[in-house]
Image 1: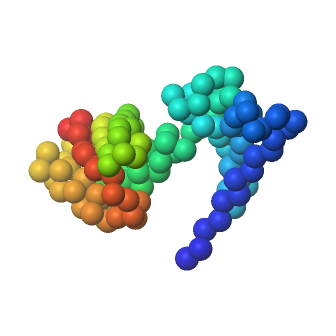
Image 2: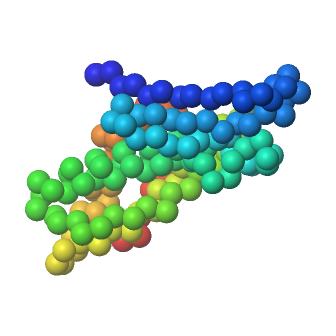
Length: 151
């Protein structure tokens, strides 16, 4: 399975070699979505970054959270557990590890609303554990992914 994403940036007349150029760029996905992106203002100061745009670190956290959610939903459905909504306020931590700045930890904090009686806490924990084990993104990274579901 091959996926493609176009990432496009232009200098737009900046000197460039003085590092005073915009980090704003776009991500174009194969389905047609275009997402404005930028370096994080935590890494590259304004005005050379764009605070309103998605930065790669935020996208990384969102990808981990989204993958977990989609896997969770796919595991709940055949068990006849009806999910009305799923909201995750995921957080990521960047820190120096072995002299490199990395996203070292992501904490997923999902709040799930179920139709009717919610499943037991044990069943929910089992679904989250299975979702984590089966998530393609979680299986692809070395970031410590921690679960703190709001059960």
